[in-house]
Image 1 (tube, one colour):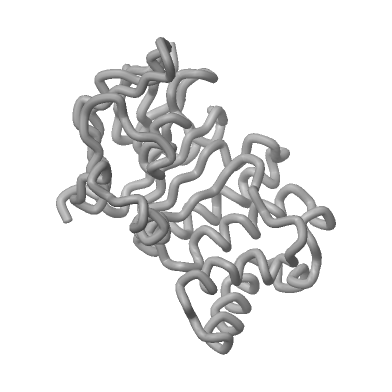
Image 2: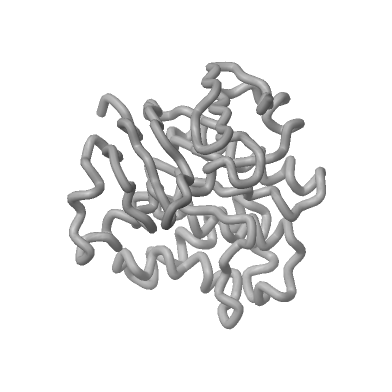
Amino acid sequence: MAHIVKFENVAKKYGNTLAVEDINLEVEPGEFVFLVGPSGAGKSTLLRLLAKEYAPSSGKILVFDKDISKIKSSNLPFYRRELGFVFQDFKLLDDRTVFENVAIALEVRNKTDEEIEKEVEKILKLFEIWNKRNLFPNQLSGGEAQRTAIARAIIGKPDLLLADEPTGDLDPQTSWGVIQLLNEINSWGTTVLMATHNAEIVNTLKRRVVSIRDGKIIKDKKEGRYEIH
């Protein structure tokens, strides 16, 4: 596929408020892209448009070379299974253990119990949270909860991972642990699109940086830095 993501003249309005406008953006398979900008700049809106939580007010969004506006609501769950999502507030199910939270991503793909056992054990060991597998989310540290959320997001081997401020509520050391995981996932071939306020992480990683302000892309650099002025 030529592009894994392509925005063509995309705008999104909420009522009379223009959240993003004139967005033209192409992301190649295997890229790691930071979306940076102040609060309210439109970073989360772009990710939510990709997740098809909202439809654009105008313009076209292609994911995996398909116009996602043409996806029927009945096919939406299948589309979303091709993506991974990581959020600032984890969105783990409180009444399920770490193991069960991660396993759910395979259950919806109709994997056998044996496949689920094997795959979940493998990823929890890789993410160094196997020893927490029987704990519930409220028994985890922030870093452990985020590792669980990332494990759930990528266990289905998505081609595209969307991360919305995944280190927002974490201390610096834990944040780096999460970023190293995302970096590793990217090295496996998964494209990562991450919205962040963390200038230190962006400047250290030297990946592509797309800067957004007032709903518009103001800068797009291959090995960029955190610049929002």
